[in-house]
Image (tube, rainbow, N blue to C red; front, side):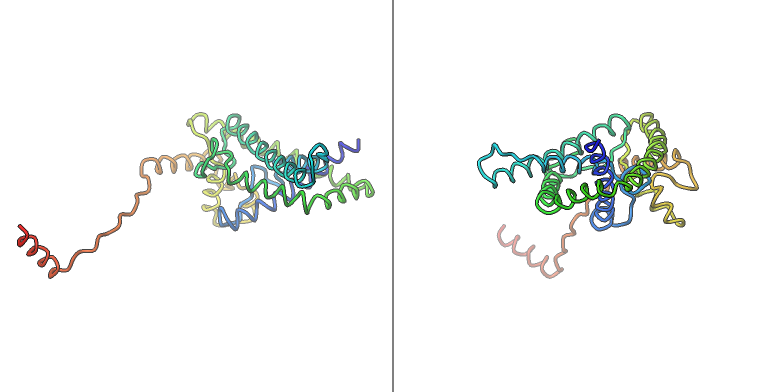
Length: 266
């Protein structure tokens, strides 16, 4: 029973903190604007929930068979970084093949595998794992102990899962429409691009457009998808042209001198 509640509580914390982390990452580094991360409406990302559960239990493994503390710490951090990359890859595959949706796209990153994982973000996951292992893990150990000392908080966690269940049902109904359109059009919808296009067309109700990132209030999902598909076709038909460097023209006097020299040499 305690283990079950611990897992539920860690998923709740990881999903919530992960949503905040991704929200600011998009604002500061990738999209450069406020975008609701993930495919759900609420402030949670299941990927980080599963990730925190793995990090928590891997951090509790003593690795006593290794010769010294340096080796134990190194193996633990590398194993956690690999575990996070594995979760990312499995989640990416499920959505690409099952829902025809690409939640993120690393196709432009060096060494990427199917645009789902790449060395750059594996390094980020490993750095995050090291941060968790050396600094954050004791706080989560304390949080789990606090939960069992304040058992009434379990009702709050239960409410979280109730809201999330409703959110999952609503969001997967929407993803089903996206999947049907993508299958018919023989494409994979890049979720972040799709949300960004919808966000750029929103002129009012900014808050609701932020929360309902996959749904335009004044248009149907199919219409939004058709616009997204049309824009893809335009990009394929008219790829951005590289700007050619303009060569500076020689002054008339210099051209004349060059011509005369050529004649002399001839």
